[in-house]
Length: 130
Image (cartoon, rainbow, N blue to C red):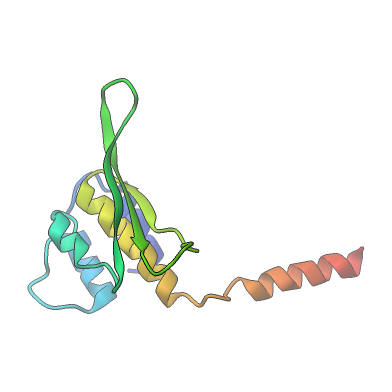
């Protein structure tokens, strides 16, 4: 499963599952047996890259006394500003942490300058037509 599809699947999941755990495992090529990443906060934390930690993990509410999921935000102490999304929402704490870890993973494996040629091309074409 593509990492972006996995992130979307994790965000829309109402609870953790073995299927999602295996999909995460394939992204990292980690050990067997597959830990319950989407069902255990401890297992989800094992997905964090070196130097990353939880900045905030809280139960969301609708200001009327009803809980509506979880919010997770990761940070890396070595960075003053984190340039990519390291926060997420999830139905459970473990799912929210998995989504945040997958977003960090995606930003680490995606080329940093992938969008620049398209942006530069757009600027050049708009200048040429002006």
